[in-house]
Image 1 (tube, rainbow, N blue to C red):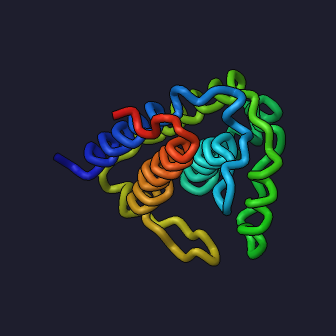
Image 2: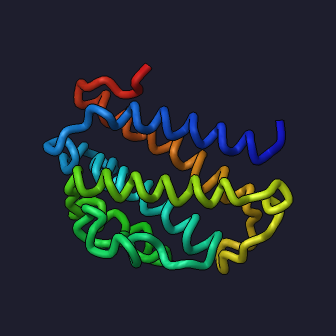
Length: 176
């Protein structure tokens, strides 16, 4: 099996775990404050999808994100995620605790982000995985690293975080 096929299969697996984990989240669950330093489920979900949009469109293809272009004001997310700068942690926490998600609208945006990622992946060749992307203060990262760490690993980790928060509230976390 080549590296690109493996990455595609890992992404499919991560998406299946994530979509199964969030499948039973209701509108009223999205904005609940989970307590402690944990963030609301809707904010975690929005963060994941918007981050994938940003990674694939902006970082890997030097295009505008879908949330800045074809889905501008149609993401179902009340306000954009804060910029990833030196104040990101504090700004992201404030955003996460105030952002509102319109789930049916958001699900359509999510679907289009996934389709755009899949289209990008279908055009890649194995040799493209070694190309480097300059992320400024984050350094240079290969396409393979970005796909694995910024999309696949991120999807798995947020599925776990959401699963744990659901469990604390008495709901089933992972779908298995």
